[in-house]
Length: 262
Length: 262
Image 1 (tube, rainbow over the protein chains, first blue to last red):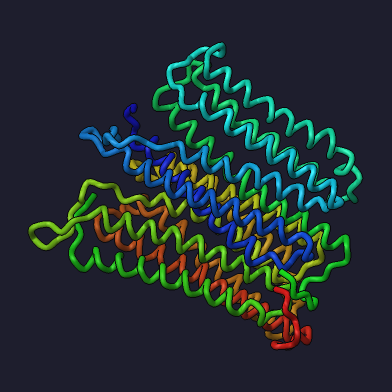
Image 2 (image 1 turned 90 degrees about the vertical axis):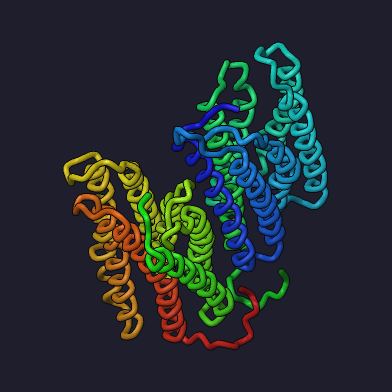
């Protein structure tokens, strides 16, 4: 592991802490605000709570691992302590949260029951495959060419990713376009948020192919992953909440009416 | 890092602990008491809960960092342990909580939907800029003149601060003046609380320009920030609660009516 300057170590440290706070307190918000949406949309907020809760757990582990992996050297720099920095938590996190993010989106769309089940099955399987196929390539560290084993796993993992995009733009495109004004805009925006945040991960995956390495790359990858995760989980969850609020209002739901279902 | 006397170290230690307790239990109050206000004002109490929760998290981290940064020396004084005291948590905390404090205030005012969205956008962007522009100056440690790089970032950060004050006194001034007796007084008071507590932070920022340094300055800054944060977050949240209660009463809301949704 490479040496880090005081500033580099602490930038990652503070970004990881920022991710923990963002995940925990967006979760608190989803719990406290779930009755502000109509009963049929509360399940999406419950799923959002699970996503950010799982992420908070893994970020706490990543934070502790980061802290343990370095000690202050004599020159005031941070040097390897001998304990490895465990980043594999991220894959376990994604294996659990990525399918749930797609579940949230499908549930908030309020599709007919039969179509919903079909979509959920397709997207959950595709997202599992996407993560599982990426992992074997991720743990190969020597490959610096696109035409290597790492590159092959990356390519295989991209197939389900493209399929997910095909479902969201192709098969669900007309459902989304048919939604009324504000709800329709929000659904189109969340689909774009998903595209841009998820698109960040393959770029990081390809970092070794660009010859991108050393302390600066380590720091950029950790900061980038943290920001992408905060947007793709907490930010995404807030957009799901806004969609659920908008649909609840469209359907005449009033906050504070006698509604006991949760 | 400078040596601290036994009393200096423990004053900061106890103030940080006080802040943790104040943040956690004001949050418990906001959760437990949120159904005492009319449904449309509960969102302000939910946002208050997030603010003090995020602050509690960061104060726990600051507390741990403070404890780890010093050890008892031979003379009974506290000397640097070699671990740095990480104060950057404060900026991450502010980046998340300061926009939320303005959101609480706007939501409790009960503006018409369109005006509310406009105000929220303006104030959230201004508060983000205020924090982001202050940070580069904060981490410059050598500058002791107002006409330095630190001073320049401070000045840039002051522009959005003044803009926020302009919106609260100018654009929202008449809305606040038009509120009935008790609610109007409370709204005017919370605006003053915001001005005085937020006004404290730039003074601390300018400490190096006054030649203010050493152990006494470190202690004064930590105690000052902690007190300002407790007032600006927990105290402010309690005032938001009082405003929400007063408005709920004005609008004929009765506690204990059959309203189960939250």
